[in-house]
Length: 570
Image 1 (cartoon, helix red, strand yellow):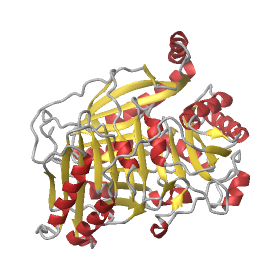
Image 2 (tube, one colour; image 1 turned 30 degrees about the horizontal axis):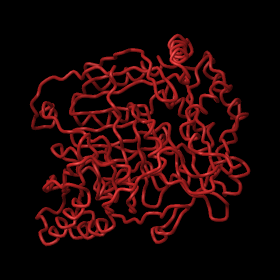
Image 3 (cartoon, rainbow, N blue to C red; image 1 turned 90 degrees about the horizontal axis):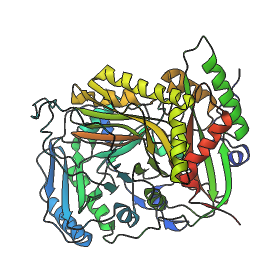
């Protein structure tokens, strides 16, 4: 049977997009035009250092260290200290042809990372906010306490370092971008810049949901994966802050010490020391037009086809996750940082993130789902599936939660996800524990079924296998993975890009990734069309017993945290 959605066409013109609801085409903007006014905000300036992927899997860079300067009372003082410290570096180059150095200034007061980011004018930029600890999460099973020379011990697990609440960064000391699928070689290229004993030197970024699928124009600047070690970053802690700068160089990549210093000085001159308050209640913009891809009719047909395949006795397919891209045309450009601030209001139990390449659009989200967290050899992950709205009263909310717990259809979908993740972890890890095996996760607008999993990898080098094995999970793709992925490629006529892909950070001894759901892509459409654009993504799992209309309503529910921030034209 032919797909009920049209076959995925070549990237159409904007005029055909507006009339057909096909894939969106958004042209990228050159750095030369980067300071022009777009809507109500100035498009930040940008500069490009080295792409660390060109180094492949060579050994670690020669110098890897963190230097701490005296504490400052306020961000303004910290900026001055960093500028002076970097100026002094120019005449004192290290002997090593490669390295990475972080210089940080502790700030005695807590600052707001979003407000700091809102004040900056440089690209690329990134933001990642850690999720509050879950009360039902089981303790990690820790064996041993001493580090080993091969990097396979717990690295002194008893040595605690303070974790940032949020991290905002601009510029890139080194970036990592490729157009081929993210590989072990790419992972090693990133890790060579990340020392185990410098926990705040991290590479932030995201990976496409499907790195083998065709890239649409609006996602081009991200490549198949995109990570940066920020040049300047603001670390927000519970009771203090850190302003830091990172310099990276590698003569073999034609990016010398002097190249790196000069580029960093240019970025530092643009850094604002005064945070800018952000409106976190609503976006001052009006919806001109809304277009869903697919339409409701096409969605119903696709879900019906998926159910027929799932029910087919000759197939092993038990779940398919289909998604929708909702394109809002607005009268003014949406500032990604303002959108991020609004999402944070609802984000205590979720990861907030923002990734924006130099010439690209901003990928912004508020994901409740952890893909994995690694600290030394310890791994945590989770299963999340099944969705209901929150109730208007406590009694109503309790009843809705009980209905979710007792639903056979939702239990089937959730069990597929949980058991698949457990099986994948058992392929790579020891001591896999699931607890609780099924519980409610309550978020401000929705509630889900969830399970927590912990395990231990045998070698820190197995981190790539964890990432490569856990993504994509049945929660965003289906089961079996390849059959579900192929159905998605055949039936979805828009490019998911980084939606539902891994988004987070790599560190030397620790890494953490969320699943890039509850997310949107913020950009500007072509000049000859009136309006600006935000693409909002949402997905729903299709299993036996699914009702297409109920799943469409679930898409609306999941996208509501974005929709509520916009208002329709009077």
